[in-house]
Length: 498
Image 1 (cartoon, rainbow, N blue to C red):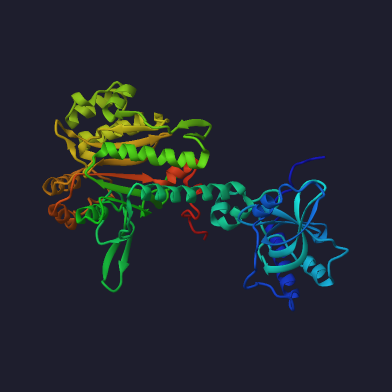
Image 2 (image 1 turned 90 degrees about the vertical axis):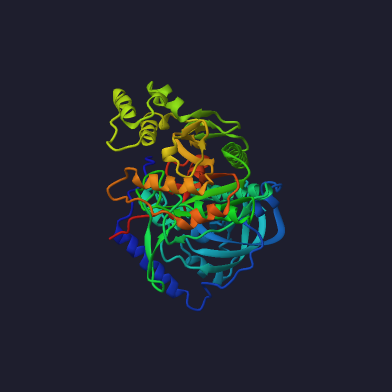
């Protein structure tokens, strides 16, 4: 006997099934449906826990009220499996004993309907915890059929466009998103325990700032001005440090960048940014490791996590390697002895790196790292001492003025976190912004304006501060073994269907 599933139903059959559901809904006249409330006493998982000691075939006199979506319906409603947010559970109706009213309701049920059931608990002779239905209520009628039994929502595009159906059909989706939200809650609690204050900063800004990215632009009608969706909260957060709101602050929230989409990028994404006064970037290394190790232990019971078949070890401390040393290790090029752009470009060319004209020394170093090193950093690694020219908000080392007190954390070849000892000299900060504006960028990527309000805030005096930003979508990918960022975002950005 073949086990190959039948082909997916054509659209005409799908429309016919929907029409049949509409007719069933009409037939429900006289019965209450789309109920306002249902007094649910137990989740499916709670019933199973409470009665796990029952022997096969044992019955109880305990009445429970459970509710959920119908996943399967067998023998004219004699056996129904429902799913709630905890688990699925079997409902049994003795067709020979139920009332005519209940029998009629059973005949009108469809897969996907949401029902409430009251009844007593037993374990079947085959060992399954079951609720013997005594009272049945149709709480909400599903006019759209659930995903086809054999195929489900296998089409990736359909899964993300109809996430609600994907959640019902795919246990992995439910597990992934729950792990993401549990992770974010855990990070908040950890930082709260460490004395950090959670804050909020604007999503709409008069100018862009805090990162080098293309913004989304909108318009405020009452003020008649353009506004930009924030690309990073950094400058506002540091102004809160200046004001002394707290010496430790953090924000978990959305950022928006009008750039490409791929397996690691979505136009809106969630970041953690935190700042602590009177520390430098080395303290940010420690808290980065603490956060990730804490999340791994919470979700997996260990700091060793499997991603894509590889074991990633998040046990602190993680290796710290300079960007220049890593490039030299993987290419043989020592950019420390070519501190000018022309010489650096020539050195890069000797190892097959084609560098655009007009790039600064720091941009050439960054390009070489991205081309030859980044993808090879599988185990958690802090890449320290990045070029100052690509780090306009970071302090430089006093004895190495072209190198910033900065690190980027890489895992699985991805950048996960970025941090530095914050530049708090307003005169140098303005000079850095002006220098950044002159650097080569894309043809459709004009220089960012200088945030004079931020410069004025620095002039008021900011204590020495360490700051760190972490991409929580990427962290969720690593913690849930998800190959695409869309798997860990409930509703990723999609191209509209024309």
